[in-house]
Image (cartoon, rainbow, N blue to C red):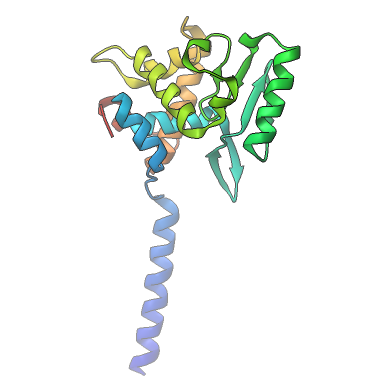
Length: 196
């Protein structure tokens, strides 16, 4: 009789533990490439990761993940299976679209406004190079002592306004999800962290 009671108790404990895991999601750690780029730029890795989720995130296997071979051409998202395909798509887009209307890669770097940051546009399809540029831009948009979310708004729209505010709210939700918090919760670590 003791064995069935123990088994029933273990099942109950496993069920309770499983339910708790559903209620309190685990914290996600930004992948090493994000940590490296963030460390080099002296910015919070979680902020860089959340920006990439916002800019190039796609749903894969039930999760939202940044996609390195993403383009945005005149407001239309385009996803490619390989870097070579994305480069060909980028070159085609450049022939038909003003460069200030084309964003590339994980951080969706605008090739018209940031042409001083790369040698070749297809270089921005290298995830490490793209993250380094995105981290540089975030660092430049941040003022000492202010909330990093303000920098993310300027990353998206330096002029600010409602588009920057909407962007900050979206990035804040990504930060909260990555931290394992409820999606509507505040993201305190992004406000205070200065390096990964």
